[in-house]
Image (cartoon, rainbow, N blue to C red; front, side):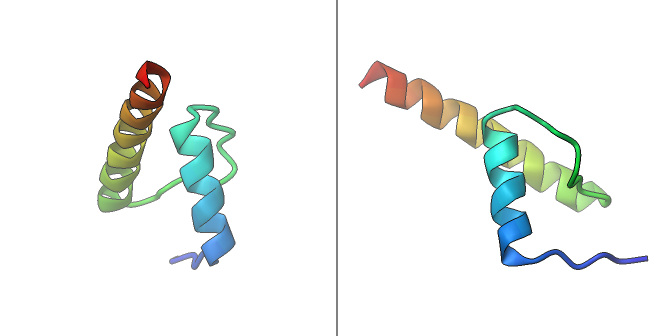
Length: 54
């Protein structure tokens, strides 16, 4: 079953993934979704590191 998420759900998943809180209420089900979230997490960690160094 394919579950469609709203734009707000996507923003919530992005914020939770970038901050590495990981509540687990919204999770990617496909391999492609997991790869995209992995890229988002790595990008978020890089952005936080860059912001701290400024």
